[in-house]
Image 1 (tube, rainbow, N blue to C red):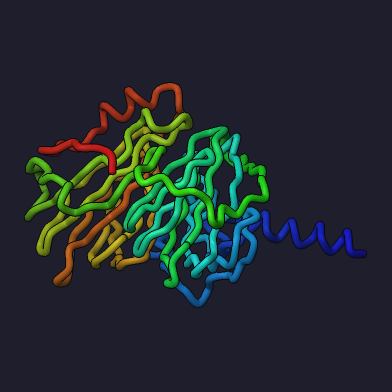
Image 2: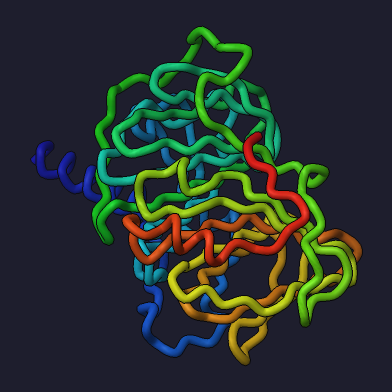
Length: 314
């Protein structure tokens, strides 16, 4: 009986970690009103989880978007809170690439056994076949986001090492790839037909960072009164997470309001644009996933936004 209970519990945890715990979503090919495709961050829906991948303490989280929300190999978007002295233990993904992002505070990130502190908003991707972990060493909760792309659509894997990474040596300079969401480093985009105001952009991580069809991670900031031009990418699906501010997204002929904490999947070939509203800039984190990994460099080069600055890194 105990064995059956343990197996059942493991199945539930695996479902949550793989992003299948989110409410059912309409398949990408169906005609779904845009407002229904936007998923809001709702802390009341976060599930309290202890010992995630053998980590310390507690992580409260929910799946905002699951695999069936995408027409690419994007697998999930998770959102939650890492409680003080909590984290995610060391684990490998051999069929997935993943990036932990903290939206405030600071946390200890570990990639391949090397640990450093990153100050939010910041994140660190892990490539296929490498290990990673995160630990909130502070006395304050840390807002957390997790992005996952698979090498083969619908295939998720993990291998836990049982290491919570508590009390380990910390490198003063990260020995791994990382990125930081810094508005000051985003550069004004060149004017485009249909755009207005000041729109700032920066490519944080480019195609060379990833081994899967994961193509890039971008940062977009719309000043008050600004709007982007409509853009459609034939071979790239994008997922937008609203880091701050409020505004409106238009996909095709459909528009919907968006606010901080929203996640929006946009499928390949769909034209989309954004418009800022309110006093605070509208700030977006963008994840682009190409149709296939073999041709992603050509696909990304053809789709690159026209920006005055194309800086990269943390």
